[in-house]
Image 1 (cartoon, rainbow, N blue to C red):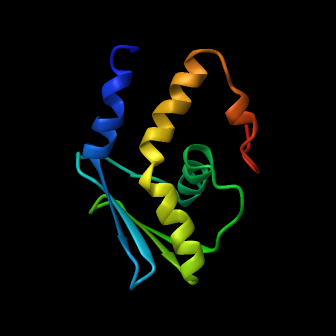
Image 2 (tube, one colour):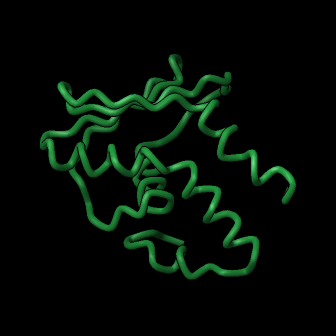
Length: 119
């Protein structure tokens, strides 16, 4: 597993295409590899943003998941909220792998800091 970690960031970036549309205040994530079943649940997207993106507040957004197209769209009402999440998405996969490395080394301090996250 440890030998895979350095290339995991690149693998994630290639497997999931993230596009932001500032005019529509929307961010879409498309999974390129075929997944049988449910791509994600709306609650999982919020957890992902908190865990890997460092989101510390509740941001109103509409989460649309199309399992057939393997696409997740986040729609925002306010440009400010869109920009916060757009910034998070720029480094989400780097942060996810960094958190995994940290946990594998026995440090779970970042996980404990995640607000409103159930065990």
